[in-house]
Length: 377
Image (cartoon, rainbow, N blue to C red; front, side):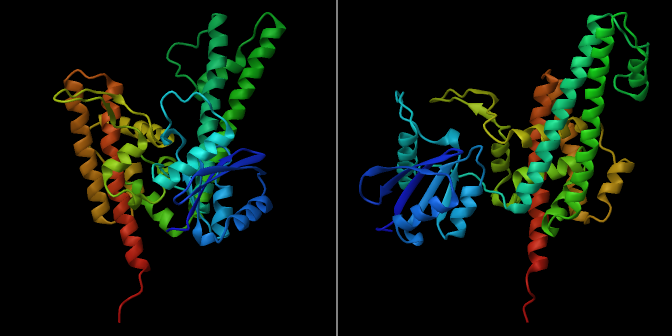
């Protein structure tokens, strides 16, 4: 529209730098305002009618609070992917004012890439699954500290003892050192390991309750994804929390690209060069899918736990899951037979697994939409 004003916001915890690009004019800075709802409301009112404003800011640690505030004011807002904002080669000056102007100019020209903004239900579930992921990382670090401490002092578990089983834990509790300081160190490290384990148990319980109270459409997709081998409730909830509505991806390849699990490429003319995966995507989604992909190194089978997860699902969904077992296992064997490293093989399997996740998610979301559609008389 002729009277549209494009507003770029460089958002920080306490301040927001503001720049405006007129539809056919220059880009100018409006200075800095406090990062407070009243200040933002006054700014939008000063800039003009809400229907004539287009606002954007970069995704970052401040989250989506500003986005939802602007939406409630009736202002069209986009949250932009920071790594995809065009930057001039040789530009070595970076300030809040210049960042805001760059956003306003890019929004006007259509060169910015918006990210998906989760609704309240998806954001709450995502916060919980990421808290659990952080707890798992803390547990791994705590275990490593204790193991390295024992290794430094020549302590070896009894033969045939598997690490971090009940037997292994009891062995650590019976250890004694000559120096009281070392005994205190062992006790502190072990206490931290126990604390991390209790934290994960607590988060697992909270996650199970969160899935039960989630909207019906989310619960349906989470349940359907568990028909896939290697994807139990935690993995399914993580996928739904990170992806959101699966049907927003028109094709499975787009979901693969969103995960950053596609190969990088540098081709020119007749020469084609492909390298490692790009990793320019959602790392949380990529991690959970790669973990699930390890299950497909085994022959296709439906065990007791998988059969329980598939109970109540439609035959069409179970057929997709069974097809995934055969195709992905064959893929794993074929690539392994060619001498590919196991990690590369599993990454390739994970990329194809995302295609089956997309197929199941789209099918379930379509069923949910049709079930909620009013009948035609």
